[in-house]
Image (cartoon, rainbow, N blue to C red):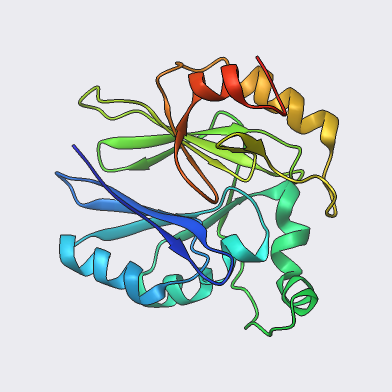
Length: 214
């Protein structure tokens, strides 16, 4: 059984998720862009052990609270290496929006396409989907109890939209290819939890997304 809490975090309302194995209580946090108190409440309420802090990409709105979460709850910090320049450049990113941040903690472990991130009896499959950033990834979670598949798509795929590609490292051709070849090939019933905004499904986007059709 999966335990999952998803909520908008930080000034940019990034969708942060705490997801855990309901039996072992092992958890991961996906994209902690803020709301450290909310994350703490969820971890405390379910008595979770945080195993990893994972990121769909290295933009400031998805990594802003990573240091706070690590210092409070532990867990290894994980990222795709192609986005390390963004992660390490958090101060410059924040300055673009007029605020300051504390320096990041080092990444503990880099993941690659096809890697599996375990948490208890559950796991998340890493799907490298470059385009929004060079190291953008999605996380494919299949409940061990065979419930509906989940896809944490970061800022690659949104409900009826896709991620912007006009920031450093962005590539319009790549993001379209990633969506068509890596995401639209998944089970159409897969519930998509994007980096911002409402949920959707793979099938709905393949049919109706005005930016990328299957």
